[in-house]
Length: 136
Length: 241
Image (cartoon, rainbow over the protein chains, first blue to last red):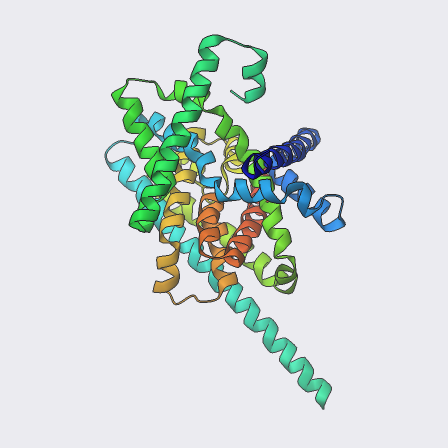
């Protein structure tokens, strides 16, 4: 068997594991009283399995890399679907739509990164003053 | 239509459409990736190019969008396992995440609140209706979460999906420029900001730039998604009573 084919088979098997984890997440999601999607629960499940060692790198690693590398293709049908709501977005509405998308994206990007940097600095300062106290 | 139901209702036309839509989508995407690597401009985001190419093809061939969307169900289905796979990149960066846990979660929380409040306020200021404004509230989180949140609030699902996808593409294309423009060099801050602002589409771009940034973006996409879900549920309960 060629190496490429072997790799393909391994990825296919690992994909099966990931799909099983996802389906399990969906099953849990349908039992929960709140609307938490199965993929987010599945993500938590996989992380738990990896941390606890139930699943190891060799069980999922290659398929994960494969899916992550090609992730944006999975959004293509949803993207094409935008065409379906063109009738809702004509003229001024389309401009407003685009404006809101652009402005909020910039605002979220800035507020998030600023918060991360600020909290990091605050924690560093506190840690530094704590060591100073100890030194005294 | 998901692959399981395709196999269980083996209809020749349905199967043919499924195969054609899957093969054509992959082929167009691969071409877009080749173009992207040749030209090396972030403006030619492969997903954006693929979507535009497919929309042009469908319009020229007079194929209804719904027909394509049903036939291309494999991709929509695989979005689930692909999101689950992000746990692996988080796992590989677990040490750094542990060290910076508080700043990362704080960033996601502030970003999620800013996203929801600014989207609703801006829509209302521009004179868009309540239904439209509500559909924009979950625009920064990944599609499955956004759809659930939008339905909970009573928004228009199609508008939510459109806003989510456009936001994702904008974030993927412009996040490196925004980081440069506002002098954000901290890789953790950049990653968390991309994931919170532009969910999985932004994350796929962040992973191209740098593994750490990508992993932080993956964490942020999950945490921001969780926070948005909880805030929406709480807000809904408060306004109902």
